[in-house]
Length: 259
Image 1: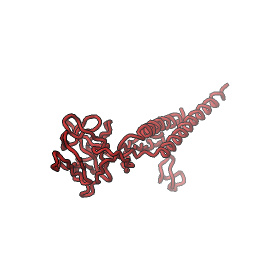
Image 2: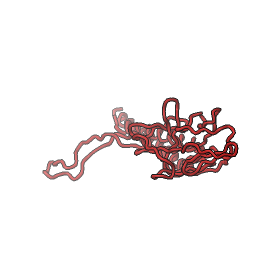
Image 3: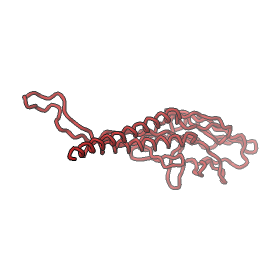
Image 4: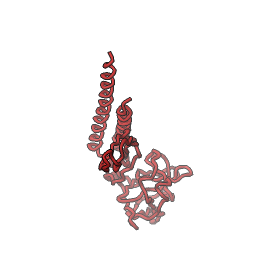
């Protein structure tokens, strides 16, 4: 049986995964804080008929070898953490991060991380995400508070009965290997062994980004680039299917020789 069948089949599967990944990027073009994913591929094992450097029949060392590959496989996906475009909303509880760092939120008994700063207040006055996950450490805004201000350094202040009060400073987290974070949906990521432990710090200090009140960070997906990837994957899929068709025609020609 021709190896081309199996090699081309792996190529078609790889392009299916490429299209799935591209479709997810495009679906999240308007998702706050979304970071597009890039899928990585690697070639499969090679069938080595004659290794490079082997001694030939004439006693000479062969400068090249003879190897035929077995196709391609997906290695993994990498998040592209390039900055998204900030959009002004004018809502006091909305925050965007310019630079490195993630908001730290509680998801049940777990800690999760997000770049989506579309916070609001719950019934207890806590700043929470759209799904109700609160910032950690908690930031509580009294119901009768006015003039809410969150500085670029994360300092929360507001006025109650004409008196200015200062709340806790909003901290940011970052990681030695940001690409090792695991997406769990709802604009959240969680720590893994690959990401390393969280490193906490205050905005505008030690390389952490600054906060902008009244803004939201948009998705960093570029529609034109994703459409190019979509077309490339589609054409590669067609070419791999054509290779299978060519192999089928070759086997058909060989079988007709005995007729």
